[in-house]
Each structure stands twice: as C-alpha cells, then as structure tokens.
Image 1 (cartoon, each protein chain N blue to C red):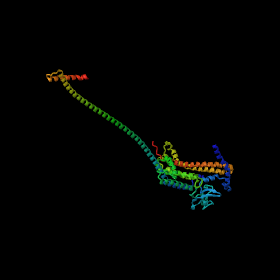
Image 2: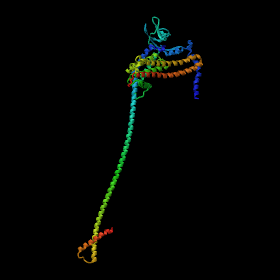
Image 3: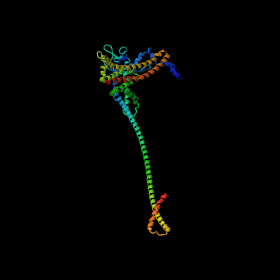
Image 4: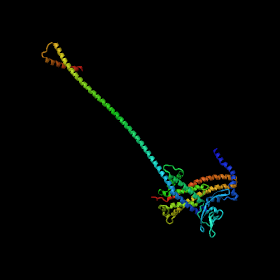
Length: 362
Length: 170
C-alpha cells in the first residue's frame, strides 16, 4: 500500500504537469518565440552562465532584461585609462570600445588600433566574477571576523560559543585538527594554518555561493581557471618557498640507484616535473569539478526548454525528470562544494607537510 | 577555448582580493579562533586530568577511611578484651585475697581454739587432779605421808591417762 502511495505521488504530477506547462508556455517562453529565436542556443546559454561577463544578468521580466551593469576599467595603448559602465556598450561602440563578436576575443571588450586590427586593451574591469569574488570575500571576512570577535569578547573557557562562532567553530576545528595538524609538522603549524584555513573557507564560500542561482550568488567563480590558478600558485609558493633542504635534495638527488640519475637524470627530472604538476592538478581539479557541476545543472534546466517544442506531454514529463535531477544535482553540488574545498586544503597541507619532512634516519 | 585561458583582468583582481582576504583573516581572524579553541581544548584536557586525579584521591580517601574504621574496630576489640581481662584479673585477685584472708582467719581461729583447748585441758587436768586427790583421800581416808610426793604421783598418772585419752578419742 505504501509503495502504491509513492507511485501515485510520482505519477500524479506527470499527469498534471503538461497542462501547467502549456499554460506556462504562453507566459514564460512567449517573448523568446515572438522574437523569432526558433533555435535554442543551448551552448550559448550554458557557456554564458559559466563564463565571465561585463554585466550581471539576473532575469528577464517580460521584454525587459534585468541586468546589473558593472564598471569597465580599461587602459588603451593610445588613449590611456577609461572607466565607464558596461551598459554604455549595449547600443554599440563607446569611446572606440565594443564587444568583440567571434574571433579570438569573443565577448571581450576590444578596440581598433592604428592599423585597424582588433586588439584588447589592458582590461581590469569589474566583471561578474570579480564582483562575485568581492561579495563572497566580504561575506567570508564578515563571518570569520564575527566568529573571532566572539572569541575576543567572551571567555571561551567559561561559555559555549553561540551564533556564528558556534556555526564555524566545528568546521574550523575539523580542518585544524584533521587536515592541518595531521599533515603539517607542529613546528610549521603557526606559519601555514592561517593560509590553509583561508583557502578552505575561500573555496567553500565561493562554491556554495555559486550554487545559489540568483544574485548575489550564481557566479561561477571557483569554476573559473583564473581563480583556481591563483589559488594553485599560492599553494605552489607556500610549498616551495619554505621547503627544507631535505626536500630539495630529494628532488634533485633522490635516494635511487645511481644509474637512474647520473647519465640521464630520469628520476630528478620527474621529481622536478612533479613540483609543477601537483599544483597544476589542484588547479584543474577544482576548476573542472565546479565548472562541470554548473554545466550539468544548467543542462538539466535547459532540457525543459528544449522539450518545450516537442509537445506538452513530453515537455511535462521531461520537466519533472529535469527538475528531479536538477534537485539531485544541486544536493550533489553542495556535497561537491565541500569536498572540493576539503580536498584542495588537504592536498595543500600534504604538499606543505612533504616539504618539511625530516630525512629518514637509518 | 576561452574557458581554459585565464583572463588577465580576473587574475589581477583575484590576486588582490585573495591577498586582502588572506591578510585580514590571517591577522585578525583565524589565529584568534584557533588559539582560543586550542586553549579551551587544553583547559578541558586539564580539567579532565584534575577530575581524574580528584577521583583517584576520593578512591584513596575511601580506602583510607575503610582502613581507619577497621583500625578503630580492632582497637575497640582490643580495649574490650583488655578490659575484660582486667576485670577477670581483679575478680580473681579479690577472690584470692578473700580466700587468703579467710584461710588466715581460719588459722587464727584454729590456733585460738587450740590455745583455749589447751588452757581448758590444763584446767580440767588440774581439776581432775584435785578431784582425784579428793577422791583418793576419801577412798583411803588417810592423809598421805608425803603430800608432795603423792601429788607428783597423781600428776604423773593423770598425765599418762590424758596421754592415753586422745588416742582413745581418735
């Protein structure tokens, strides 16, 4: 009997949804169809969401696009610094700058140089990802400082933490105990713990904010290779700048049979190569995981609109399936958001720990 | 692929933002939290240690108490036993003394009785002698020639007779 109830719960929406979807069609999808966009540009939608942008598109209400224009800051080789809102570029070139269409700089702000070639100015615009980074960083700093303020103002020996401190303390303690103290030697703990904790919470908050679909969330920050590159370079520097002599000896003159390193430095080569591949793997892992997560969720959402043209029945059933899988993927992404932050921090801690290993005493 | 090419503008901002976040959190954020958490952990560990020690002390004290109670009980038993012994001793001594006294009194009484008996006997003896002399005078009706000689004779006879007497009595 119980199973039957579940089946009814699952099937009933399938029967009802076609009607709802057809009703929705006239409202939600009408502008798109009226504008003559017969073919849905799935790739454009997905990459548009995943990639960076000069404005923050939120939604469309009727015919009106709701976007937040963001400041463009560019330095042209000829005319120097320019700063203006991206909304000025919507109706065509402004001060010689315009959005490139196709080609090498697709979607970026470009200008024409003296020879008439399309060139990119030095571009440090506050793009969607930069704004997202700023907002998320502000949230992160506010949270952590709130937590640390609690500890400053209260006697932790007499009171149990409350509020933000109670929320963050277990997480901080988990990273501190399991990840950092487990890998980084005690003598180096004070030097690296703040960095590793910062990295963990930075990645975690950006991952989680990325899952929230509307402003101020939704920017694909940790799924952007520039962000993960900076994080990986930081770990690379943290590992190699403070490494001890044993670490470098192990890289250039490892304990292997001499013929593996004398005429052809085979093992030293792979070891030195490994110095760079480790942070590179960190960079790619975080980038690919988060980007793929965003892409998969967006694909499921797009399924609803692709099937819209295939008739109400199919559209209805597929919508249910897509929503179901979308919810599932969202939950999975929450898990991935934590796991990727954890993995990045843990591997960084392990690499740092390896760079401070004591030579084995025989 | 533009996805795989890090954008210079975003790189620039990311470096600045991450550096600022790291600086702020590393200076005012995490060290405060981790040190307090650490301090509390030490405190809890210390408290647990203290509680354990107190527990052990309590257990030791309970043992000590038991020991003291057992000791006191043993002492009590010993004292009671001693008291009983002393009582018995006193009673025995008193009994002995009383017995001695009684024996002494008895002996004294006996000697006195003996002396009385002696004196009574000697008186009886003289009386008997006088009587026998009187009897003899009456029997013989004649003054004896030598009074003195007669008396010693009679005395001698009485002596013999009295010597015979007790053996006959016994």
